[in-house]
Image 1 (cartoon, rainbow, N blue to C red):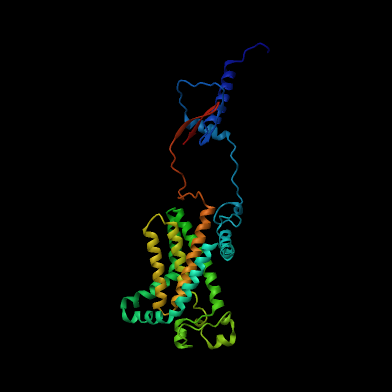
Image 2: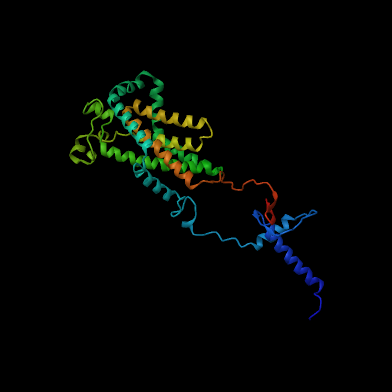
Length: 348
């Protein structure tokens, strides 16, 4: 009735609701809020029971529900997000294919230098091959190690990448998992470009040259020669797929990704590139490729690896370094004053 005072218990309930509302606004975990006052003064001290009130505050906040649509998340399994494995892989193919359209003077200089070195190596391919093919006969350790090292440009390299990814997943090392996935993208893209050049060049491998044309640096049968039924019937498959080296491309693609991802550890780039170089040399001692094949294959693998890692860094600027997830933040209570507004920021 008019003029009657509210019962004490009703006043207490209203006061409790108002207190809860103020705490939710001012001291919600991880949220900085400001109260407005033109001449507000604060004195004395107070204690906040974070455990109890944080639960109340969290229950009052309407967080947006996470999307349950598998294809719209930022998961590596997404087919729509640019962070997904396959969208990212397709982007890398497209970006690499159109990269000459974006070349500036620096890139054209590098391209010209690469072409020049490759051409120079072609003229010395026979001399280098003469030196390389007898190393297995001269040195027993080369004879034993060369075939093993060479396989790290094919199946052994793939097994290493897969094993690294699986072990990293078991120990919840997200960087290791992502590095392995990036390595596979670099391997896929470099393999496609190398295969395309092989088809267009149709160069003879050293062993095929030794038993076949004996041209001295590998005969070049030209575009699509391997699909010429009359020619392919007379020549072995190794007569058409020497240039460039796929093993060297895969080795340098893997090495470049791991070296770029772990460049903060000085030993990693050195070990990665040294291993890739040994794979390239083994292709010479195994009498499988010319020096120019190895150089261009390694160069393609290197640049594909660099592009793949570069794209990943752009799409993941603030990547969480650990799959274990929770960042170790310290509890922090900060007083905020901005003009006539004051407030508190509480984080834990």
